[in-house]
Amino acid sequence: MAELVLIDVDNNVLHSLEERARRHGRTLAEEAKVILAEAVHGGGADAWARVDAIYHRLAASGRTFSDSAELLREDRDRQPAATSAKSRMCGQRQEDQAEAR
Image (cartoon, rainbow, N blue to C red):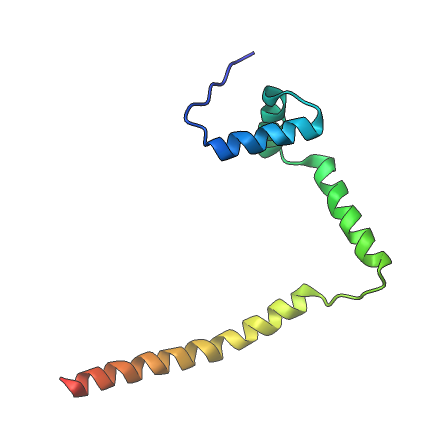
């Protein structure tokens, strides 16, 4: 198996990594390997398990949430108006600057 050596690791990063390893009952090297594997291969089922847990907790609270696609669509529909207003403002500034010369 290959070896990986890291130099000039920020002290705060190293300290956080040591704390994380301690919480998970792993050595510093084991924790670093897990983090690298998750970064390269994705969190897999564990990542989705966390998402599912949050989803179920929110669903159990009885709160309802709007569909984000609808919110994005509304925002997208507003964009052209905001963009044209901004363009008009920039055009007016340019005219004002030209008159001042």
